[in-house]
Image (cartoon, rainbow, N blue to C red; front, side, top):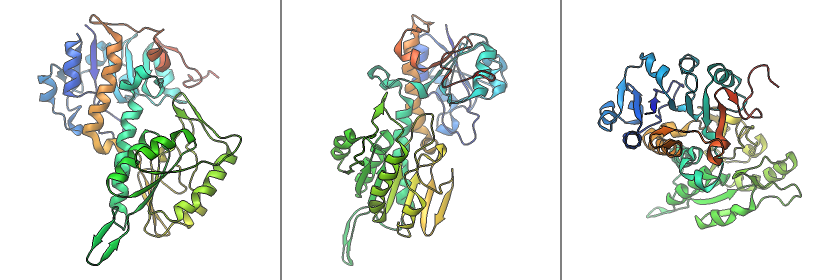
Length: 380
């Protein structure tokens, strides 16, 4: 029976957990021995007793045997070097491992002869939808970004008709119509705002309008970017300059801007410049979900709110951690979907020809499978 370990997350500020009582019960039913470090789910609202009732075995955090004997470790973020060094040769690590340019991780995988699946690299195919952790977490981030903006804004979101007169609805501009952007649109519309959406892909216009928002058409240039593998391609300098010029007028009238545009493995495109911020009214709010990749907006700082000439710039990193219960429950189902493809009659089998596995397998028994993403020290 495969031994599956769910650790306490070690990253600073990480409140999520890689399993829920629901998914633990299903893993046990599928023939796994499931071990959880004591208190692993506490910050996400899951008690040890709930995991034990579901069939999991709660162990002390100092129990190094659990790491040594685990066949699979499922996590949210990469465990510490000390923990990874305890994993046995041939064991499998699954999670949001931050593989891009991560030489430390590559070296540990090679040294320990470990296999690893990075969910950031999961292919955007129909079979992978139930395992798409980036989408499940982006959905949460888009929702929470609007709530942050509403709490920070000096105006109402909805239109109100009162005895003192009519209050006009807030104007929200969402930059990027991916999963986070579309959820931000839906949430802002539920709160009664008028919403405009900017995206480099004309094809998303129909989705945007189906949610009741208005689409800001991208510049018509020869190098207009499209998408690859379900993600927006990185735009050229000329295209971004033309897009900023077009956005500037919309932002000058906006109460809120929600920035969600990101490109996997690359710096986030700069969509709001200092000059564009100068045109925004004092009291307006910018929430930058891309701040961890350099930011879509000039001046945002990770985890901080900066007041710039009266405009509030919110560096909204790690928003799924602020909705830890549902974020964890959804993420745990993503991991369950992956594990179910690996389990066959109670045995763990890595099918290297399976498109789902092939696309996200960054290491197999210590052999780096995607050197363009993950390169060990000393290898060009």
